[in-house]
Length: 154
Image (cartoon, rainbow, N blue to C red; front, top):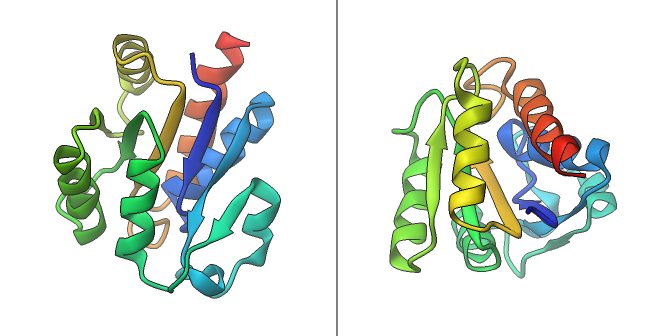
């Protein structure tokens, strides 16, 4: 099952994945834009989650790196048409990496998540998705889902 959760550290689904993994005692990491760039400003605290700074502050470049560095990408989103989500999907397809889009507020989210991870033998999961400013409550919802998933596996 999942050994590590990575993300780009953006406020929202990305942070939720890291927080949920930390609560479950699972290793975290990933690549963040240079300067620890997020919509909330620089967040050097991301280093405490094992993230490293990318060589530039481009969101797209770090998105690609996190897709490449993972076995599969889990996109938590209520709006899959956002630019970042579409780029993540494009990169996953381009690099032939499994991915899934899950509405974290769906009553079926946890069962979809479990099935995807088992079916794809995910060891390193890249968590991506909507920002908190675009989807209120997503950070906590994703943190709880990831904690539930990983808590059952440990």
